[in-house]
Amino acid sequence: MSRGGFYGADTPMAVGEHLESYLRFVFGFIGITDPEIISADGIQVGPEHREKAVASALSAAAGLRAA
Image (cartoon, rainbow, N blue to C red; front, side, top):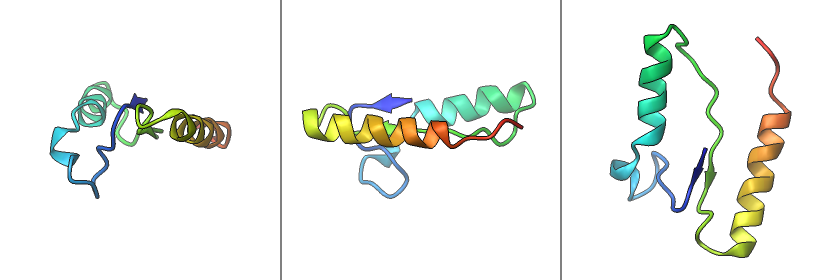
């Protein structure tokens, strides 16, 4: 997922995070109890940060193994 700002658990905006908690709820409802969620945070901060965040998320996704 991508987020324009920073909503991780260790940020002041954590209270505004709603997408990850919703996805965890929905996946849990259908029996997926531990999904791997990859986030590209802060993509609206600026072009340089966006490129770094997207590259980091793509790298994390490439490193996933099938269950």
